[in-house]
Length: 485
Image 1 (cartoon, rainbow, N blue to C red):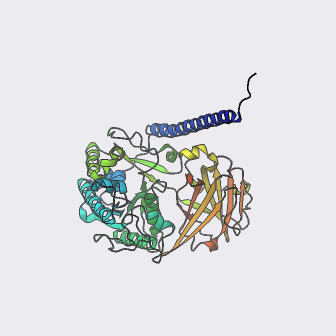
Image 2: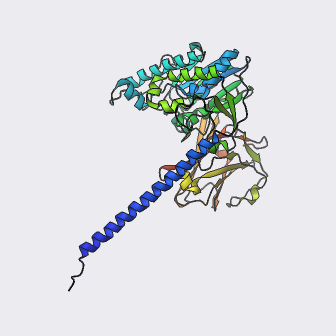
Image 3: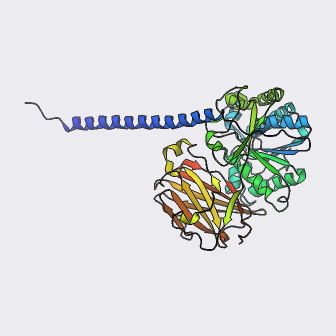
C-alpha cells in the first residue's frame, strides 16, 4: 500500500511552485522594463533624423550671458555657440553656479582614495575651475569673463526647495561648509541659501545687461540644472530687471537615455530627446562649421577629471551642431468668478489651453504606470483662486502619490506651498478643494496662499512610494493682468 505523502513533502512542493512563480513574474517584469527602455532609446535614435529649424549665428552686437550649473556644462551645452560668438566679436560672460565639488566619484579618482575629506573636495573644485579656464580659453573666452559663484554642488535644488532664508542655511555634504569656501567666488563667503543665490544672479544680470541668456532647460533631470533654470528666471522677474529686453535660450545636458548614440560621433547631428521634441518646447539647431566643432571637441577634452570617468557621455556633445530651445509663456488665463467648479470634470475648461504640455512616456516607470504619467497642466484664475487641472495619460492610481508644488517669490522672500494627493486619494489639506475623476485632478488654491502671483512656479511630481514616476519640472506661470490678490 502506498504511504500518504508527508506534510513536509507537500510544503516543499508548494514552496518550489512559489519560488518558480516568483521567478517567472520577476523575469516578465524585467522583460517589460527592458522593452519600455528600448522603446525610449529607439525613439531618441530616430529623433536625430528629424530636421530642426535653423538658429541664426551670434552677431557682433550680442551680449551673451551663459549660466552653467557645473564646470563643463557651459562647454557641453554652449561650447560651439561661445566659439562662434567670440569669432563674431560678441561680448561674452560665463557664470558657473557651483564648482562641482560634490562629485565624490571624481574626488575619489583624483586622489586615489575612498576616504574623502572636505579639504579634498575643495582642492578638487579648484582643479575643475582650472579646467574651465582651459576649456574656455580654447573657445576664445578669456579668464576675466568667467565668474564662479561657489555655491554647493548637488545642493542647488535644496536652496530652491527649503534652504531659502539666511537663518536656514544649507550645509554642503562635500565640503561641510554653509558658506562658500572659495576666495575667487563672485561673493566670497556667500551664505548657502536661496535668497543669496538669487541676489547674486540678479546683480550679475544688472551688471552685464545681456541681450541673450543661455541656461539649462527646466526638464533637465539633474537637480542642479533645473534649479539653475528656476533661480535665473526668478531673477529675471525682479522689479529691477523685468523691463530689460532679454531673450532666453535653454540647453539640455541630462535627460535619461540621451544623447543617442552615446560616444564620439563627430559627424552626426545632435537632436533633442523624442519626448521633449514632441512637447511644447520649440527647438532650434545651431550648425557648427568644422573648425568650430573641432574647437569644441578640444575644449571638452580639457576636462580631464570628467572625461577620465564619463568620456563617452561628454564626447556625445561633440557633434556637427548644438541645440537650443525657446519655451512658451506659461499662461494663466483669467476666468469669471465661479466659472470653474472643482468636480473632476473638464467641461467648464472649454477654451482654456494647457499651461504646460508635459513629455509623455519619457520615463521607464511612467511607461509602466501611465496613471502617473502627466500629460498636461491647465491653469486659470479668478479674483480669489488659482484653479489647476492635471491630466494624466490613463486613469489615476490609488497606489500613487500626486504632489502639486508651488513656489512664489516676492523680492528676496519666498513661499512654498504643496498639495499632496494619495495614496488612496487622501489629501494633506482640508482647506483646498480637490476633486479627481478618471485621469483628471482638479484643485482650487486661494491666491492668498502665495506671496505674489507675478513670480509663481508650479511642478507636478508623481511617486510610487519613493520611486519617481513622472516629474514635469518647475515652470513659471504668467497671470493675466486682470487677476489680482
